[in-house]
Length: 221
Ligand SMILES: *Cc1c(COP(=O)(O)O)cnc(C)c1O
Image (cartoon, rainbow, N blue to C red; front, side, top):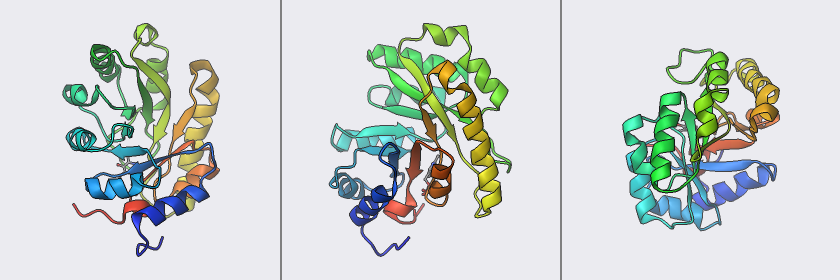
């Protein structure tokens, strides 16, 4: 990726490379509202953040037709700050978290789409469910009674590596698990792929890529 291009050029060019039915989540964490507006000006509306407070601050300042996706780990006590506006939560990993999302979304009479985060990285990673625990959640009685939260798919983060055989194995495993269960549970999204690996993720059936630095440039923390 050539970072001398502008944000708007980057996003337009990236979108020409994505199949039409694949959604792009433009990951704007650490980026300013001006930078987000540059991407917005191309017609793009789906943005992803990994911190609830940062997302809420930006949502307040930016146009209301932006669809905000929470892609980071979520603490239950912060769900209330995003419940009024968040469109999708990518990293759900427990029934307790789902119960809180149900409660907070209910207060605003909304339905929040969620993805279950599945642990696919072979490297040590703190977050994500194993397949058995994901199935326990999908089959749970509580979930059937929820009217304000809807599990629409799965999300995975591959190992941070350029080793394609590792990435292939990890994406392939998640895709197989998704295919096995998507009809039983009405799942239609598989969120996988970031700046460094989205092409491989697409080849493995991703329906939603989360791309930050290839659009906005490197992040300065
Ligand atoms: C930061 C982040 C991304 C985007 O990463 P890039 O490598 O900049 O594209 C995608 N998914 C999650 C969960 C992230 O935290």
